[in-house]
Length: 234
Image (cartoon, rainbow, N blue to C red; front, side, top):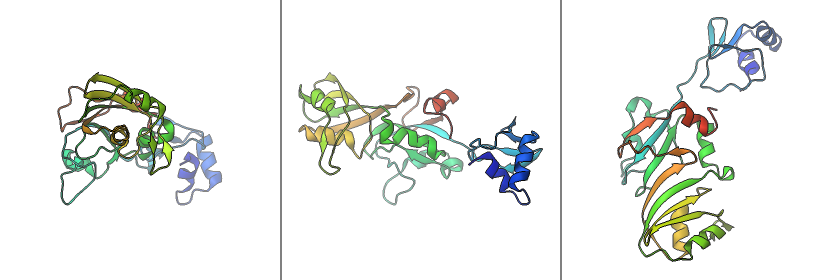
């Protein structure tokens, strides 16, 4: 929301008065004096007029979780444990999941209270690379890498996936990088070439790489640099 609107939303503050407050340097955002009413201010920032808080900053959370197998990427479920049960109770209610993994899959999962920020991780149009280590039921055929690089036709969506990269590690293991993140995309791509994934582990999303020191089921807060690498806070 624009700073001028936040100010003028206060009782008794007209737009003209808001402009005067800004011009006189009486408005601060996160302790920084601001005179630009067009500045976009998120709900995670504190706004003051003199010493009076007119917008209290909401807590902003950015977490990396090492997802174990058997946990749903969901806030709650009546039948299966969810990844939220691995998070401290006092912050669960603030979080949503940015880029889900299915119950059997493992690896990097991002949780945040900042929806605009996490959308940058999952929006197909942004083409953020996501890398997975996979094991397959059958040996990976020599033409699989070429097929993935050309894109795989998905009948249901009536589209061809963006070119993907496949680095073969051995006859049944590979590292696959995709640039979209459609429903069960990697599994469906292997199915399209006559193979089946038996395990899938997400290693990275863009510049966010699963911390090798993070135990399975553990989580940590992202660093300022990690948050900024996705595009900064919203």
